[in-house]
Length: 98
Image 1 (cartoon, one colour):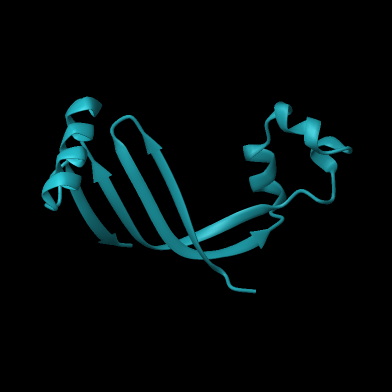
Image 2 (cartoon, one colour; image 1 turned 45 degrees about the vertical axis):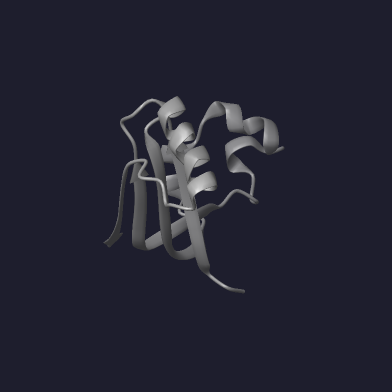
């Protein structure tokens, strides 16, 4: 099994991509801390279901892309770059070693 993973999230202001190593844990205290009643629908025995586990990610690097301009402006720049062959400047990007 390859433990290397990537976790990515986005919202209206940008994207975040985290690379690292994953492991499975059944830490009872952490499961209790994170448990939501709504999750019980997927586990026959509820919170006590023996199949419940958590994925822990030890992060190595993170890369982010952030934009403060309206989405339509970014889309225009991307479309323009398809015609011109240039790389569009649609915000900030950086890689951080963790």
